[in-house]
Length: 154
Image (cartoon, rainbow, N blue to C red):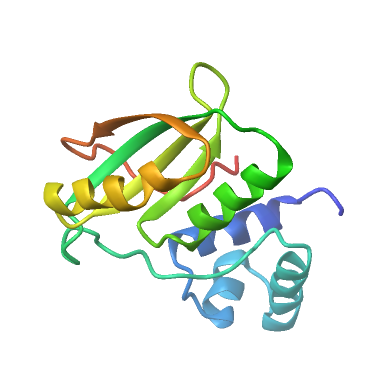
């Protein structure tokens, strides 16, 4: 993969702002003709710098009022239990993110739920049944100050 030039960086930044921007609008904003702009876009997709497109949804308006940050500790770290753990995590639509972390905890999860009762049921039915989990600590978001998926490109 070649290093990104300024035009590709601007193209990526524009798409982070508006993933539905047409090729014609992208080309205009980048001062390119449409064909070279389209080629750049396709190359960025083929090189997996662009991994997909999606709408950003308002979780609260969709009835998902609880956002929890959950720290997990696991007692089992062999390949089989890790694979089973990851399959369960990946299959759960309530788990937005899961990170294997350094420090006192093995994993940090970001979870959404309708309300506290729904979150409590999720902990009982899902998290406590994960293979090898020995400790679960939850921190609930009181107020979201910033939330973005945009990466700094400058």
